Image 1: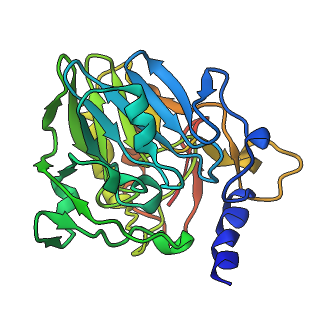
Image 2: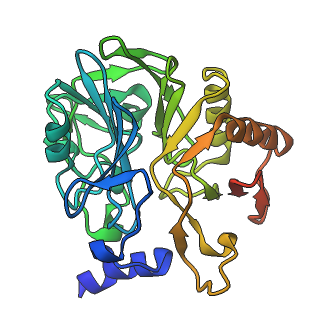
Image 3: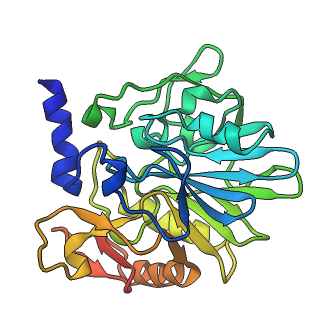
Length: 299
């Protein structure tokens, strides 16, 4: 009976089964199948988006390689073990970080031995013995996903750098979608990995105690990113979908569709910042407003 309940969520929100067959799953032209579940999208030779295109939320996690270490940003839905993909791609020691604690980003987190958390990801959680956290507010109840035990090795502050060996990543707090969200920035390559901070299409920023969505925090996060990233930066999101009706789909029946791009641009970030400066407060009743051709905000 419970299975029937949590199977409803993907059908209502995305008009998809939880897991779609490979033959019915579309991927990008520059994306390849790794196996019958995971896909690979090479941003460059040492930056790889590991996708779960068959999963209804189409998560992408990012493997970022340096000369001495690699960093795995997010760990997918947990439907399959993403660590096996990582180990097939590199023999480097792995640091694992998460963009936030929602269940579709921490599914295989327990599989990693070296885990860093940002300070804002520890602040609201209860730290148990041996630096262990069993995160709350993961939304795992939506798909009957338990909260993992996360044993972390180090706490990273806002704007602090992680040296992977000839490649530095800066940790930037980016709350809004969730109070514990972070992004990672590679200044040299101008790559910003943003988790669920932003994605193409509609971003709901309606205050929610369950999701911990906050328009006020989102405004702060945008300023934090703007003050640290450089023109020409590309942003890499975790979910490549948008509302079908915004694709002018005449057969729209609700839900979301696969969008034409995973990346967003520095211009998108600047347009968003301008919009937020013009709309200081939340609306009493939620409204959808277009920021530009790529972004719409409900707030």
